[in-house]
Every structure is written in structure tokens, then in C-alpha cells.
Amino acid sequence: MRQYLSLLFILTIVSAQAQLTPVLKNKRGIAILPQQGEFSIGFGVNPVFTYFGNFFNGSNSNNFPATGYAAPNQMLALKYMKTNDKAYRANFRIAYNNDVLSFNVKDMSPGADVNAVVTDKQKRSSSFIGLGLGAERRKGQGRIQGIYGLEGLISYASGSSIKYEYGNKLENLDTGIIRVKKQKASSLFSVGFRAFAGVEYFIAPKLSLGAEFGYGPSIGFRGTSEQTMEQHDFAKAETVETVNSLSPKSTNFTLDTDNYNGILKMLFYF
Image 1 (cartoon, helix red, strand yellow):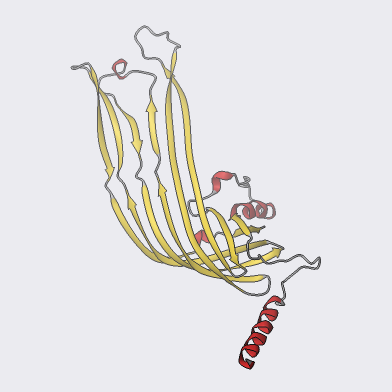
Image 2 (cartoon, one colour):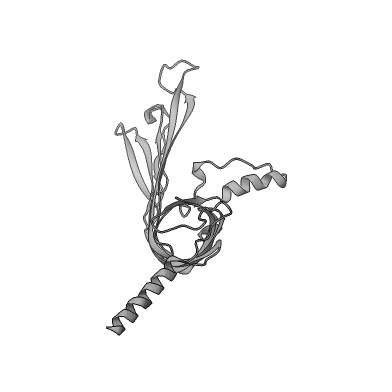
């Protein structure tokens, strides 16, 4: 009976000590570090710092960053604090771009007015999907927190696809004219796995700046790129299309360190 009472007493003391572990707070009594059950959202802030930094160096290229500045590896970062020192994390980006350029050119139709014009259009589109999932551990009692863990990454970039719409029919142009109908850049599908380590410094309660390095393998599969040309066959009175391959399929394997292109992340916990 004494043994059970002694064990119960020891467990009670250990539990009480764990509950009395101090929580880092600012002068107003607000907890600085993230706590169990909290979420965070983060993003790369390099372009923002570059913008404000250029105020002091006389740079003329000081355009304010728009949503399009993010590179494929500058994805939105999310975290869930499973405990005070363990978090599940996800990074993702879904992007689609579509541009249409129009040009007025001379109307070459028979009998057209000398000042008449038609419109040529260039339609360009591309897309990117990226997803990363992982877990991280945290170590440290002060504002500087060390982080480390593992995560997997997967991404798909469609490559740029360009389509041309011409106002003039080929049969109304000179014999032998060959023009581009569409171009398709090679797509890239990649899968990777990385171990990472880094730091977060809490500049304010639940607000930190962080950076990290990683190491791991990745494999990429690149598709073909091709170009479609069109030419009018006057003998057969029809337009003929030909498809030319610009580059073949390829595969690449990489095992290297990374630092996400030197990205400095800002993270908000709530």
C-alpha cells in the first residue's frame, strides 16, 4: 500500500511541476509563443522587405509586390499546433494564369477597304499546383524557437500554352506562308521528400519571422514540348497543320540541400 501511495505522490508532484512550467509572456501578460490547439498562417515576405528597403538605397525599381510575385516554392504555409512543441504543417499553392493580347493588322480579304483592319489574338495560359505535408518539432523557451522535422512535396506545372487566332485566312495571304497555330511548353511533375531545420523569432506575441534549410531527394518528370504550324495547300484548297516536337520527355533526380530560395517567412498564430 505504501508503494502505491508513494507512486501516486510522485506522479502528483510531477504533474504539478508540469502545470507550473512558466509560459513566456510580454509585459501586458500576453503569451508570446504558440500554444496547443492554435493555428498559424504564413507567407514569404522577401518582396515586401525589398520594396521598403529600396527607399534607402535610391533604387528606381521599387514596384510594390502583387500576388503574382510568389514563386512555385513560395507557397502559403499553414500549421496546427498538436502540442506546444509539435505541429502539423501544410504548404500549398494553386495558380492559373490566362492572358489575351490583341493586335490590329491589315485586312487582306479580296475587295477589303484599303484602311480596313482585322484582329490577331495571342492567348497564353499556364497553371501550377503545389502541395506539401509534414510534421515539425519545436525547441526553446525564449523568443527564438528552433524547428525541425520532415515533409513531403508534390507539384505540377503545366508549362505555358500559347494559341494564335488570326484575322486573315491563310488563303488570302501569299503562297508559301507558314505560321504558328499553337505552342505548348513542356509540363513538369515532381515529387520530393525533405528533412528540414530552422528558426523562428517571435517579434511580437503570436507573430514570428522564420527561415529554414532542408535536405532530401526529389524526382521530376518533364513532358514534351511541341509546336503546331499551319500552311494553306492551294492545290487541294485546304489548310494543312503539322506538329513539330521541340523537346522530348525527360526525367531528373536531385539530392541536395535547399533553403527555399532564401525565403524569409512571416507567421501569424491564433
